[in-house]
Image (cartoon, rainbow, N blue to C red; front, side, top):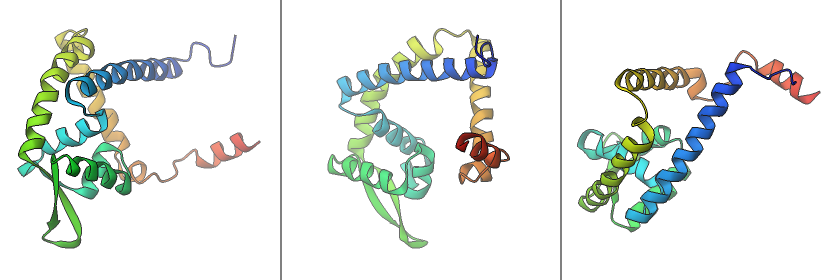
Length: 170
């Protein structure tokens, strides 16, 4: 028996990763089939539908969807080619841009979400009762908020950085 057998932290993370992988595979397959959109694009479009005036600064959008600025720029360029998003200059920053959802973007994301919401109910939240749903949502917010604190958000070293370097390098 290994040193870490039975450690609930490893078990919890393993279950989380396995559930995440299974759910993402299911959602990605369906979204591509019904709308031709990869999950990454759906995430971008959903964030824009839920933003004031259906627009978001590119730098903020990159943080929200977990992409580098150049990665988001490439995704937005592809979405622009399809007419789902347009870029608009920021009034207060000559170097900045907003990503703005277009009517065609609204139409495609509405179509995709009609199927996606059904799958969210069936595979994601459906297996949970009302109390479990509330706890799950609250827990996810707590985890997200703990990871978006300034130090973590900027990917700065944490308190174990020296220990990890020493332990992993021999």
